[in-house]
Length: 566
Image (cartoon, rainbow, N blue to C red; front, side):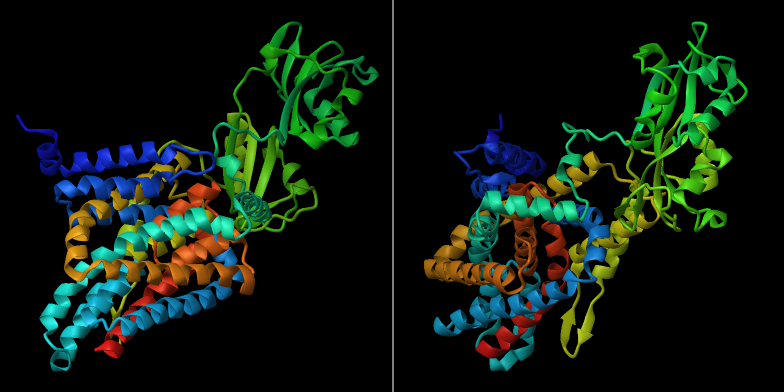
């Protein structure tokens, strides 16, 4: 009978899920206000479990990593492109300065300790968590040929030194940005408060993503009233009743009627009189005074117990462009339908009568199904909520992003590319933005996005830990423990500098500063840790621009480091 160690070696998939499960369990444990968080815990568990020697397939790591990066890009895409008008250019400059700091610190340490090209490349790629430097550095050593003594031996040192320094490069970045960073930026409570303030200014409320919370504000109301007004001493049709309400300043519709104990739909020619009960529907600010005009409100549960639809509709009818909310609401096809909210280019617009509707506006309308169907056909395209994900969209988007990322562009003799992972991130940004502009395709429900984000990241982290666990110990023996210490310094100094730079010089919001630092370190694990600590996806707004810029600049710095120390 095989023991548990043999099973874990023979079936890596079991080991990965075991590592993720134990990591999430440990990550939830708290001592006072401290907790490791799932990302750090999964990494530590995977390093421990990996000591038994677990072979992990490369494609597994890549697939889950691309899935994670796509989900990040998809979720922040609309906000990211809006931020490029102001904050984005500052983030590019931040990334340039930080990449210079990362390269400069590593280069100075390599010169001080008289490291050769192989150790320098391994130190740089591991301490700065930029694995793409390994390939570029190795190729540069080979290209330099006779200028370097024993180039093959130097190339063989690269993965060993990478393994020794990468563990702290990732873990240290996660701890510094996820735990220490908020304290250095004013304390966790203050940073969380500033994060919430920025979220509110960008119309990003994290509690709206939490199924345990609902919004106390109900923009559209359905309320029952017993008719008691001299106007109804003689029977009035529904059309006359609505006209009477409109004349009294209330833009509402009659949706249902109870007359002589019988419930009926509110047809325009149906008559109502005093003593009948009617359901009025409309925006809350319009309906609050109906009791003074119609009669007292009543709790008729049976009359109010009926289904209504709430669906987003893309405003795409050319003949209606330039129309106001009041004019649209007055159209015959809008009878029984109320506009709940309007979103324009990702930002909420007040639903006031004089607001002019524009092409691409996203209107959320509420009403009975037959009325909503008729109205949405006139307004534009319906984006009906569903529990299903558009997997065709997901698969093609990630594939397109991966293909673009795999393309290599030569600047002189320097090969540059985003890599397939960077391509997946860019694809998420672009397709998430396109989804916000035309929300009739590419739907990914929030629970599915959460799975893609958290499972993708933590499976990737588990694979990294399992792969580098044994080489970490052997590498430490081979190159000496001092390299580990040097790696700690090379990782820590740029991070502390970045926190100061973002806070004092660029004056970013703390959440953006933490995201920018994670991006310039190209350390996705730290982004997950920061988001976990702050309970917000806002740091991703600082991550995306800096990640893209740093991916290119760090490769260039890695190449320069080889040339300067050879």
